[in-house]
Image (tube, rainbow, N blue to C red; front, side, top):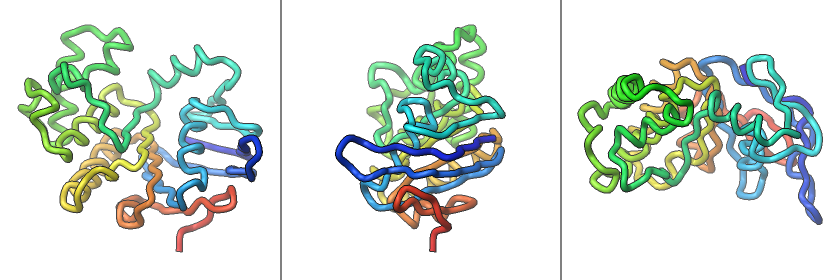
Length: 220
C-alpha cells in the first residue's frame, strides 16, 4: 500500500535527518515508528503526507508516486487519500461533533445526506454513537481523540497518519484510544503509520521500528 524508497532529507547546517530510508506498510497494517526527539519522525510523516519535500527518494501509495513538484495536486491527493490524527485534537469548537467528523466529506463535495450517514457510522465505529449533537468542549480528552479518529477515517482513506495520538492523554484514555485506533484502522483496511515517543503506545501496533541516524531498524 505505502512504499518509501531511498528517502533523504537534510536541513541547512544540520546533519541529515533521513538518509536513504526505505519503508513499506501493507494494507490494513499498523506500523509504529519510535525515536528520540529530533530524530526525524515528524519530518518523515510530513514527507509521506506530501507536506514537505524530500531531497531525494520516492513515496508511492497504491502504486502511484507522489509528485512533490505540484502543491495543488498534492493537496487534492491528501484530501482524498490521507487521514490525519494529531496529538492536539484540532476539533472546531463552534461545530458539533457530527459536523466536525463530516469536514473531510464536505471538502470532497459529498452530498449532505451522505455526509450525515457516514459521519454517524464513523462515530458508531469509535464508540460514540449518539454524540453527534454535542460540542467538543463537553467531551473528555479521550472522547475528543476518538472523534478525531472518526474524522480521519470517514472519507475511507488509503493511508492513516498518526502523530503522537496519545501524547495529551492519561494512561486509561491512551489505552482506550489505541484500541479504538486499532479497530478502526483494521476495519477500514487503511495502511496506518504512527510516530510516537512512547514504547507503550507503539506496542499496540502490528510492527515497531526505530528511526535513528536517518534510517529505520527493528525496535529492540
